[in-house]
Amino acid sequence: MNPNALLFIPDISGFTEFVHFTSIKHSKHIIAELLETLLDHNNTNLELAEVEGDALFLYKLSDTINLQVIEAQVKRMYLAFHKHLQRYEYQRICHCGACSSAYNLKLKFVIHYGVIDFIEVKNLKKPYGADVIQVHRLLKNDVPIEEYALYTEAVKSISEDTKTTQISTTYDFGNITFSYAPLQQFKSEIPQIDPIPDNIPKHKLFDKTEIIKLPINDLYEVISNFDYRLLWINGVNRLEYEKNKVNRVGEKHKCILNKNEDVLQTTISKKVEKNQLVYGESTTNMPFSKRFNSYFILEDMGASATKLHIEVFADFKPFGILMKPFFKAKLAKNISKNIKDLVLLIDGGFSLEQ
Image (cartoon, rainbow, N blue to C red):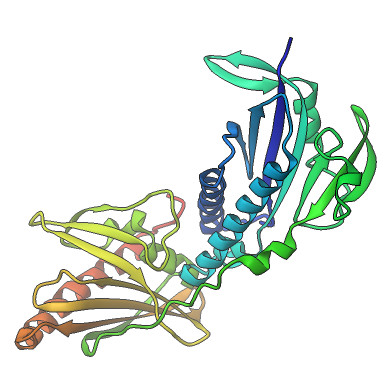
């Protein structure tokens, strides 16, 4: 006899179709992080059958249904999902279509209970059967709101909870009645996340502007995406960073310098004009300094050109201020070389899709 199982699908929606390479790439990373967040908040031992694009197909073999446990699991995942998005909105540094619209992503759940079988292909075992088909068909439905938990009659009787609304509809497998409960009201329980404060050191060590022949969003991606960093930064052997995340405020990466020295840097930001983008990095392990911040400020010049303004600031340790002239001279030499190599890279026909 085939076992009974709870079938549970959280599904993310809200991204439009992006055509820009950066937006497509970043949307993939954002969805992956959100799916990981949902899995991290699975506290009912649901098994992951498959990642299905923007959704997770989860199941749990069980001869009984505990409605309160299921509803608590829905709420836990929903709150974690929107807390992650709220934090991302404050921490994001990218303004591509995916990053700037991520805050508007929605989450729904489709939950069913039925009999399943398993199919095994190349040692991969997956739930199989009519009820598996039904729960996936229900992802397309007539629910008139964007965020909800849909429960089939096998999971939840309508009379048990007046907060749900009943719908009867016909699919290719026949007629089915289900109820749905809105989730939007749970957002009031998400703790407020404070904006990232500006923290600019006192001493300015470098200040230079250059015109780069690249659209502002593309240039921003070249500067802020560590995948491209070694193409134009000198003196660094390699970078250690999380490759499957979009860079954001608070993200850390490690530069391994030519002398095998490690420099741990944190992504930062600061307030700029509305027509500008800014990317910054901060480190506390530069010699003689308490803190060392660098900022890349970009301004659209039209005609596929961008004004790039670079600023570097530092707070010094006691007597470290004596090294300020040395730092200024070294920065002027190194950053000027990096800018030159960045210009050569762009003028050489560089494309983000390479």
